[in-house]
Image (tube, one colour):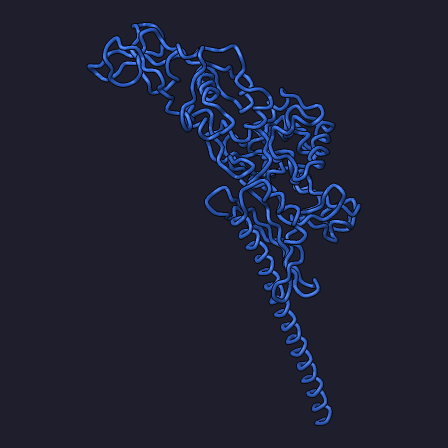
Length: 474
């Protein structure tokens, strides 16, 4: 019995030893897995930091953005770091080829700014849902796409399709038919749902293709416009100011309607400053807004007196017109010079094409919700007012044929079927550059046995690039 008892004790101790060894091995594996996952996470985070640094240092020019897209494979694919690497993955193009770099948020429609008539043209989005989105945002704008799930008729399958974890990669459970969640068609392609066409973040700085500030023609003086834009003469700038006195600039394309004006001088008008009474105006006074030395006026204009100066006041008859102004107390009543139309347009089509990108009618430095025609898909472009799938296809074909894409919105006039009227409807809705991007970074350890993905929305419309949104993928 002692022998049997001893044998049972040995068996029991052996079982305990095996159990402790198994648990120890499992704990070691778990620790290693957690450690590898943590390393992969920080590799992914390093990819986001790389994107932040690049966006902060990159010149705010159209050419710089084009180079960033073109060099994505070289700059952001399998970048080795420490024990692993990181990759910034955008998705697939129309030919199912992988794209690397940063996803332009302006390649999508902004649910906070797009009209319901635009949203309802999206594949998979019903008109009633689009109307509900437009009504819902009136009280409070959407902060991210998850809030669209509050809309009746919108569920996760419609919104995100097969990509329920939002990582933009076709995972095994997203290509297995009905075997597991989510249900998919097992066609080898990732269906992103309507989220592929929508955003709440898109924004663009009011900058030219060269990264310079645009001139606001709704507030700038004639002198400022002329001094800032070499292609605009002082007379043309004065015509812009005269036009906005009676008309509102809805877009830069309203320059087509500006009539060229000339300055006329009232009888008895005298130049600014004290002069002996009844002394005629002194010839040769130049406008204060002209650049450099004043040019000599043609003979037929010499009799009209000096060029127009908005601050110049001259003596005039009482009640002559609405431009009369009262000077300081004790001084004579004086009148501002008035303008008259020459019957000619101030700008032709070629002139507007050259200067349109240099001007704006927006008072804010940042415009939200503009669609970037250089990065938007055919489906997104086809949703814009006045366009259909055929016209959107022509735009996509045209940009493919241009090195770097469109450099200005005005170049859309070169697209077959585009008219000035169609472009007027589009002009305030589209852009050729953007300043908010989604960075989808994947950290990979070793040979890919461990990988972690994160997404961040990066905004560089301010003084520095900053993260607006952060998500860690499952």
